[in-house]
Amino acid sequence: MTTNKDLSLYFHIPFCVKKCEYCAFYSLPRAGEEIKALYFDAIKKQISFLPRERRIISVYFGGGTPPVLGVNRLCKLVESVVSGFRLSDNCEITVEVNPGTAGAEELKSLRAAGFNRISLGIQSADDAVLTRLGRIHDYAAAEKCVAYARAAGFDNLSADVMFALPGQTAEGFLISLEKIVSLGPDHISAYSLQLEEETPFYSKRDLLDFPDEDVEEAQYGSLCGYLKSNGYEHYEVSSFAKPGFKARHNSVYWDMGEYFGLGAAAHSFFNGKRFYSSPDVNAYIKKAQEGLFAPTNYEEAPVTGKDDMAEERLMLGLRTSAGATVPALKKDAAKRIARLGYGTFDGERLILNDKGFRVSNAIIATLI
Ligand code: SF4
Image (cartoon, rainbow, N blue to C red; front, side):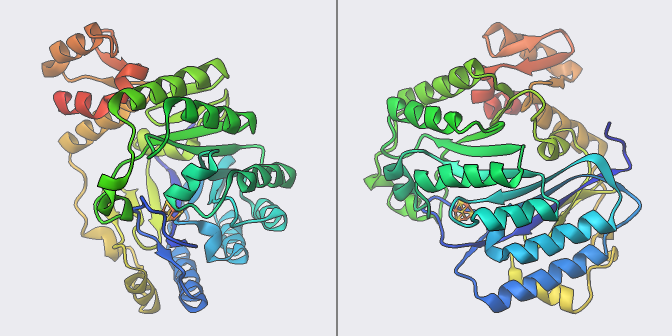
């Protein structure tokens, strides 16, 4: 059970082998050894400033592509968390890995160091689609990575899947999904491609063959239908889990639990305050070298007000299968949403279904 003394930790590792064509995340391709070593030292320093009195219920290393920092460095960081903090019995410790960035031995080392959940950026089982996305792996590499991860002892494995991709038909997406499901992931995170400015995809958008709305709708329909018929629960807009495998770390975000983010571009919600570190590796390293990770760095952040908290609770709750309590003034709107088939409303709580999740942003906008 989560208590208000519990805390989660997020480590942002902003390094990648190369930049994917659609990626707008803060990540540096082809970073040199020197900057990675300095970044590792900076994160170690930030760990030393973390509060020790809270129980840690989940830890997540995301990016970027964490193994690009160096698997030994990741192991040392997670070991310092495991040995230096009070962890809950079932503390979930996730590492994001892209196929092709960690082999059998590296995955064994990550498991032995304390990671107990792996999130694999598979995205598609269609090599032509993967090439178009600018991914560094093919599907054969993803298959191998799953086998290595299982052999290493990862019995909690999540796979990322994308849809609404250029050149991807409804049938092609379903074939790809079937292949990925045949690998036996315990959890699937599925995202439709968002065309972001300042990405190579955006600048050549007129040349790319994006699926039209009907195809995207068909892809979403087969995503929800196929995963449900294979025993996955659609428990959040983008998340599907076999029984017992809901992502605990992400649930902390959706349930408005507290978390501390380490690294450049990492966000935190701590002691009722939201704050973040700027997306600048060099600035982050400098801050560490100057010893500026004291709590005073975020004491000036304003405490999130009651109204903002209520709004966030509504927004985040509606993204999940638990739903959210609707304020009195919005109950008529919630009734209409349910009548139109987007979910259920019992007079207090609105719970969206697959159809509602698909348009959750628009629904949330009408309720706040
Ligand atoms: S691997 Fe992930 S973070 Fe890195 S460039 Fe590709 S999409 Fe972006």
